[in-house]
Amino acid sequence: MLNLFAPEVALQSFVLAFSSLFSIVNPVGSSLIFAQVAAAHSHGERLELAKRIGLYAALIMLAALWAGAPILNFFGVSLSALRIAGGLVVAASAWTLLTAPEAREARKQAEATRDPAGNTAGNLAEIAFFPLTLPFTTGPGTIAVAIALGSSRPAPGPERIGFYVGMSLAALAIAVLVRFTYGSADRVVTWIGPVGARVLGRLFAFLLLCVGTQITVNGVTDVLGPLLAQVGR
Image 1: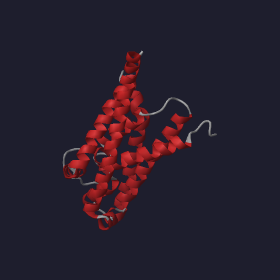
Image 2: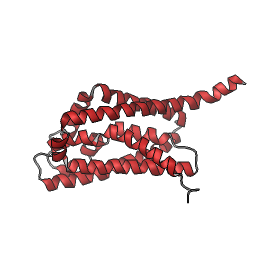
Image 3: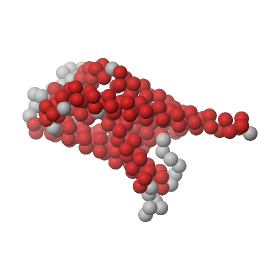
Image 4: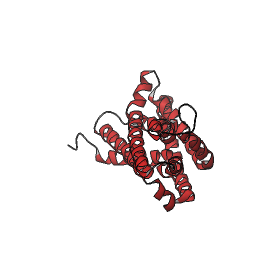
């Protein structure tokens, strides 16, 4: 069994993906906005909406992790280029989260309170996927992070299996957190407050910046490594 599965790789991948996805999704901070959006609805309606958003978020993150990099490779985007571009996008998103969280909170507030027709959200069941899942909870930034994480997959073998197991479990864990923090949004607001959510968000934003930098470094190394080896001969 251990020959088919690398548990240490799965653990490392889980920690990396969980910290990265948590910082960009920020379920605790987003739940503060969700509480405002759903304030006019009953507790039961908020729970049902939280379940749907959690399910949709899991599907989006898993699709980006598993299929994002292969799809781009199909269109001729090399793995090295994907790592460099993805790492830069992740680092840029992290920098924005780290230096200007208020601007992102205002944008997410606007996304969450607008329905597909551009009007104030009314029926929560109709907006479970758009805009409350996409782009509010798991938007382009989350998708970019997931694709960048997926692009760092190892060579085929036990390590790749462990890699995808860890990444997938991290995505599911984030979706579960979204479901429970949104479902308990009122208690989250009381317990942590806006200041606590912002401090927590900046902590994970710094970790995300480090992840984006490392992904970019890996891509640059993939490109320059063979060239430097040829020059050294």
